[in-house]
Image (cartoon, rainbow, N blue to C red; front, side, top):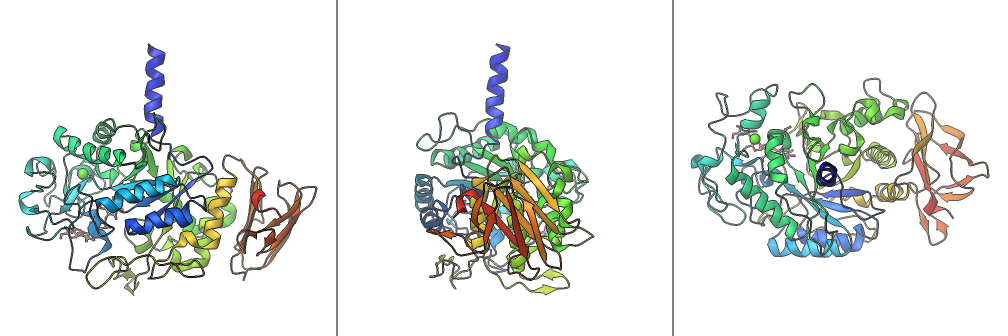
Length: 512
Ligand code: QV4
Ligand code: CA
């Protein structure tokens, strides 16, 4: 009896950490603000053939339409109801996307905004993306429905009703985050409405959730909500498969609310990862690549099995959320590829790749005054399609980092070396480093300001390998640098510090 209980309990809790990706797929990509139809097409034409495991999609729910500033991306973090209609598309398009992506083995992870509804100061009668009426002043959201009973107004103890001090865990959870009307998740009714929304997503085939603003909800309340979730849809997933859960908790250390409060419930976003890696790759604050030898728990990050990792996300790439100027993004393309390349080669955490849109970044007094600008859109506010150029890059101001050769090929590298140990570390004491993943892959970086010419043990079988950073194997030819691994497993690597990309990666699938 006791044993049965333990087994069942582990079965339930463990599954939330499992990303549910197909075997041999190890990363997801956040297609930030993409339309559902474009995501469906991308699953079929690009993500499945290139071994991506899944897609994090922007919040699909009805949201307030903000016109001042004009249609900011962040309006999608102000829900009005749980109806599925947004600038990315309607419910039919959303369901079609899930079917088409699932059918090619690329799964969908939904960004769920369940901590709050819209801002408290928004006037009643403001438009929303499905046309539902709502009245923030009286706390009415009839399309859910929620009413004044369902919010934390009585519980929050601050004068303003908003979070004033992040050092006080009660404020952080019971008061309003930037004026957003804070839901009372301890109420049975509210738990029920949220669980119904998540279960509906499960029924139509999603594989998991990014739980927005998790830090602002009590772990016990989240536990109560998660415990109501159904198993995943058996059209695509195993009978006992549970939704993958990764919770957005920002913890750079020294916070009243540690990320560890949420480890019992699912994975957690590790924000230290991108902030620290940015410093290392930029060589700021005395950081050097050599220190990456102990990357991961050795840098006091959370245990790998709980971590969801990324170089940048939709907040940190534009100065929302933590990390500041150290965060690397597509704006610093060369160093960004170094950071993403390192992330995808290193075994720590479950990896998420960012895919962005261009915006007119403009700094005034160190702040980007255009940090609010929404996705590429037409004059009427509708989001522009993602077009694909003949060279496979994207048009219409979509950046498509996931299609950059270096990033796409490192997603494959991670798939190839999955489960292999981190070994054969080498460094020059400065910013030249190398390591193997078992005997399946090897990567070497030169982030110093001088040339590198070294012969190292790679752990790989003898042969000629095609570097997947400068090119890749195409038929039996190599479009990039060729690396000869001798019968002793050693190979010579030359990387000039001015190279387009100051790193080389080889793996057993790109052996000539
Ligand atoms: C402003 C003032 C308030 C004031 C209010 C009154 O800041 O003090 O009370 O006006 O009018 C937008 C605006 C923000 C505005 C707010 C309410 O930017 O200035 O408040 O709307 O009108 C995104 C954006 C926010 C945006 C929000 C809602 O980043 O700027 O707020 O969407 O549209 C913390 C949290 C963490 C959070 C991170 C950004 O712990 O959870 O901040 N990250 C997630 C998402 C993020 C999202 C939210 C949470 C909220 O990743 O994208 O915020 O859902 O670290
Ligand atoms: Ca809250």
